Each structure stands twice: as C-alpha cells, then as structure tokens.
Image 1 (cartoon, rainbow, N blue to C red):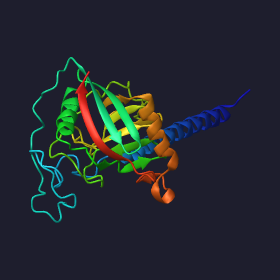
Image 2: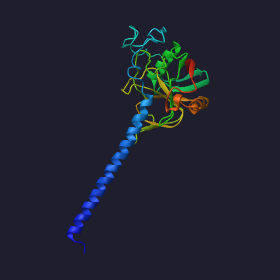
Image 3: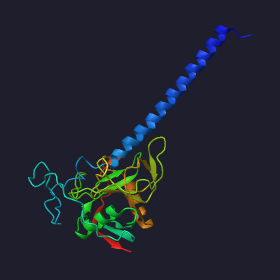
Image 4: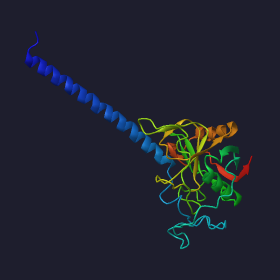
Length: 260
C-alpha cells in the first residue's frame, strides 16, 4: 500500500514534471516566434524609407539625383504627400511586366483585392519610377525573397507617400508561431514594420516562406519569372552571407502595368 507521504511525493513530482513540460513548450514557442520576427526583418524597409521621398523621385514624376539623401539634400525632407488618386478599375485584372537585364518577370495582379496597391504601381510605372532600378536585397536563409522597388538601391528609398495594407487575410490564419506561408511565386509589399507603411518596395518570393501576415500580397509571378528569381538566388548573396545584395545583379530596365 502506498503511504500518504509517498503519494504526496508522487503528486509533487508529477506537478513538477507538468510545469517543466509547460515551460519547455513556452520556450519552443518563443524560439519559433523569434525566428519568424528575425526573418521578417529581411523584408522590412529601412526606417522612413517607404514613407518619405529621399530626393530620388518627386510627386510630379521628375527624377532627381540618385545621390540625394536626407543627410545631404535640403529637398529630401519627410513628405506628407497623399497616395495617387484612384484611377484603376477595381473590377478588372491587371498585369505588371518587369523587363530586367536577365529576362522578363510577369506578375498577375487583382485590383479587386488590392486596389490601392495596384493603383500605386500603375501610377509609378507610368511615370517610369521603377525604370533602371536595382533589386537591392536577396535573402537565402529563413526566408527566401528578392526585394526590389527602391529607386536608390539602398533599402531607404520610396515614392513620397504610403499606401494602406490590403488582403492580409488572403494567406490564411497565422499559426502558433505568428506566421503564415507566402507560397513561392508570391509578390508582396515590404514595409517599415508599422501598419500602412508600404511605399514602392516589394519582394518576390522564390521559395515557400513563413512570415507574419502583415505584408500585402498583391501578385503572382509567372513560371518564367519565378525561375529567373530562383536562378538569382542560386548565385547567392555578396560576401556569401544569407542576406544582402545579390551576387547576380538584377536591374529592372522597364516596368509597365496594363489592364488585361
């Protein structure tokens, strides 16, 4: 027969084991969450980059010096410019073509789900904003994206206005680690980490990637475009790190958005 003292010790041991299991589960959850947060930083625009023009592009479409920056140009002050007036047909499908030095990337866009994003891209493309710009960032660890859309090529450039987040539930409900899967071929907006802070920078997902559902998914690459980005990723990052400028330089020579 088990004595009361033995029973008390057994219950105490079982309680301790349950506490240890709960603590270990909490640690695993925290590690998963931190991994996702750390990975997400690779698609976050440098502070202020998406929200403010930095002298590379003004609201009237005039190009300015690529060397302009907030530190050396009086004209490069924070801008409160409104986003472009809505001019796309929200019931229509649109396509974006990125003619690069390594082939064409075609992106299907749905104005019904992301009208502000599609409208902004068409506005900027019509003005030549993306022409002769470099895709400045490739990430090959934890997340798998090529980031483009900065006229400066530094991660700090933007159009001088921001657009609202859209379509954030399209990829499903976040899991226990706070992430959803952005499938290979997805095209989504980068941002500063704050809501509604997207500007012109976007990222091309070349392999299934887990990220928080805080980046507007607005398009899908065609098969040839996805392969082109995969080829860039295979070449790796300068300095053989997991995040930085791609070894295989990618320049968007011309961007166009058309109604299909």
